[in-house]
Amino acid sequence: MAHVHRPKVIVGNWKMHKGIAEARSFVTGLALSHFTSLVGLAVPYTCLSAAAEAARGSAIMIGAQNVSDNEDGPFTGEISSKMLKDTGATFAIVGHSERRQHFHEDDTLVNNKIKRLIESGLRPLMCIGETLEQHQDGKSHQVLHAQLINGFRGLTPGQVEHIIVAYEPVWAIGTGKTASPETVEAAHAYCRKVIASAWGKDTAEHIIIQYGGSVKADNAAALLALSDVDGLLVGGASLALESFTKILHAQEHSKS
Ligand code: 13P
Image 1 (tube, rainbow, N blue to C red):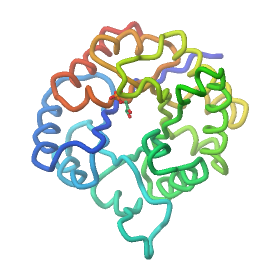
Image 2 (image 1 turned 45 degrees about the vertical axis):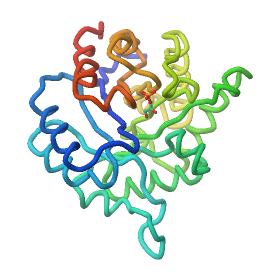
Image 3 (image 1 turned 60 degrees about the horizontal axis):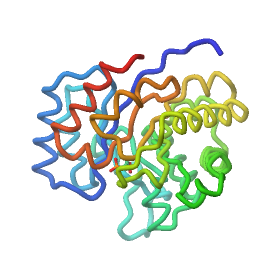
Image 4 (image 1 turned 90 degrees about the vertical axis):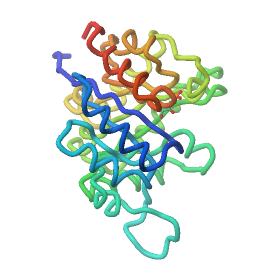
């Protein structure tokens, strides 16, 4: 495969943490620090406007952690892609394993959410990854294959190319157990192969595939140095400005 230069994209996922004032001061502080990768923060819905406002004029992308699969209508408590766009958000996570596990989200729902985001001009960040049981049963690739094919169903190669994929093995999330570089590299290469066979080589070579799961300042550089790892999705270590900026600086020390 011809070598395509893919930028490194590092995104923090705050999950259900932080209020408006804290989000504002975090983003303001982050905007003042030096980083060479593309940086994003997926913040709670309530913080979106304030975070987007604080990020204005900087390279920081602000996004949501979820979106409704409906355009609008009687869906009490839901937030549509148009509403997200309205806050200044530019991307949204879909299919995080916590939503798949606790809110029973399946690939069809994830696929519909992706379509709503694309319609509104927002960039989808789709999480995929196997559970511990699936990992131990040797079913990791089978799970990744289904999540990619079903999650991207009906999309054109051009639309798929613009999506960020985050490989987050469920057993590595919040556990302190990072997947080994060999496991990560094999999973990412496999995802690229699946995308190449369904949406073409060009799409597979350009799509950003992040790794997520217990990423910390001390393992970030080694993960970023892997040729098929195009960035990181960081949970716990993105909550403090100091640990998050250390991860951003790790990018400069990785070999790529
Ligand atoms: P941790 O980095 O806390 O393991 O979380 C990973 C994650 O779920 C990011 O979306």
